[in-house]
Length: 443
Image 1 (cartoon, rainbow, N blue to C red):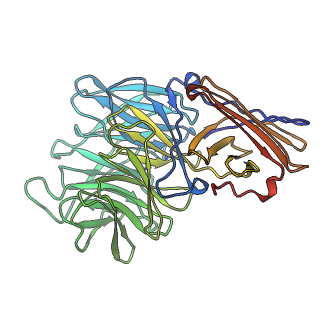
Image 2 (cartoon, rainbow, N blue to C red):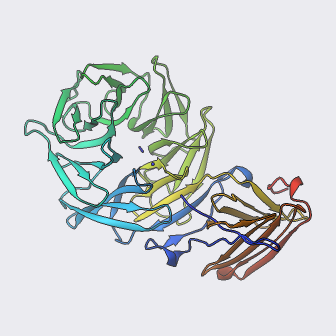
Image 3 (cartoon, rainbow, N blue to C red):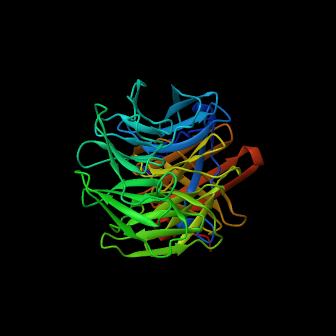
């Protein structure tokens, strides 16, 4: 499927101040409990931040990066109404009612007209402006419809799959719809096309749920299908990877698939199985995917190495995932009314205690920080804003649950930090006599 943050500091001669994005600073109710990837050191780990969506018990489905630097998502509650939501990278959430309470909205993408477009299984394609004006476009009455996934094409239009219509369809930005019937058919509703994505060849590529095939359709509507050997599962999402191949989730088999432009296919099994559902390319050169029933997001390298990152708040699974405008990974916790963010930002400053028992690292441009106490695995992460003066960078957090002060002197290469986590009564300090020899890893 489809896609920031700030920091501050403080110092002795110069001071940088960091203001944590704490729960009471956002309408989302941010939960900031970092979690390390299993079987992975903190140095290469990602941490997860969660944001509570104001309307409880609403199912979340799709998420994408918008043209306004925020993320947009779909949600709803059956017999209560659907909405499209907007979340800033600071965690502030706004919701726009869409109506049609009979069904859940599905996927959403940024259109070529700088609006957001989404699929409604009730035979509609929706468009919402950045100010929240919604327009619905109804599919032709001859179509069984049930739009599923949607993407922007190279021709300035949007393309979507019709799950029960056995068609790939195109909609112009003024709402004109053209449909293209697929060559294959499985009774009674066809091959059930699901995922759709724009390829590097400027064509649209899509997956067929019931035939183990991937299809290609040109802007003129010419369709070619490619059979995949022994897929066994159901392709629920696909994305273009950093290696120029398509990567997709194989729901029901517990594996991730890869398909090249020349037709080569291979898959990578997930050790504990699961039902991978949605996948996206990350700014870190890997791919990230969700599981419909497991409370985690996972990362797979182009070589097939997989690492799992459990949610800070255990619950249900997740559907859509996307790369955000801040370079981080964003996803929806579908049945738990939460938006999650995986922090991927790089760090350019490291404070490691001379005893090597704890460290704090930060990005002095974006304000991201991570703290680890190696003796017991205690960790914290967050985002703020950074102020730098002369040789000094100072980071300061005064949140409802924590007090953090870090001071770095880049001229003398010395640093000091104090960390207090109020909810658990934790307090410790870091003294670093030479910041140039740090690894920011636990021994």
